[in-house]
Image (tube, rainbow, N blue to C red; front, side):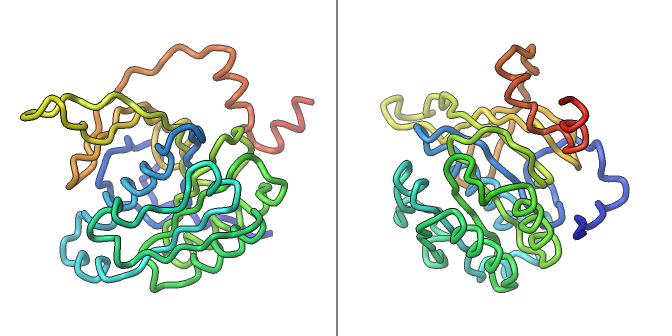
Length: 247
């Protein structure tokens, strides 16, 4: 059985923050199909870590690499294809987009992309909970990302929180933007309410994240009291053994 690579020593339980230097890994972002916040947060996280690295000496090399965006047909129907002029300037000319007909095709393209060392990162969008995206497929993607050093941000659109092998799992919603400083009629900066509800490296938490165009800014939100919907939604994050024992 293929296992995930071991975590670096001393990283378990650390608090997450923007621009934190972490090994390449798979992350999942659960978002509503009525908003574009899932793909937007995936882009913001990728840019924050790879285009604004702590090690400035590595920035020129990373800035030259292409990146991959894979969507299945259902995801494209909900959110549309990437709008290139709306992408960050540093990413527009390096996008490789794959439109997959079925989830199986999207998973194949994602895994092949993770094996390509010429890519800076990979973003995937898959709608719902297709049978093809089972725990085994999730683990294959996680292993490929960490083995080949290519980060994967998998956006789960209108999906239930099923068992998965991602190192970090986010739930994201759009948040109100702060009023612009000079023109109150202008749109504010992109803002999200992001909950890190499962992580093997960091403590779970909740933040308001904002992209000011140059870096990701986070302000901590107090954890909300759990309700029945939250408890039911998180049941898929128990281990497979724990689920079997509960039946």
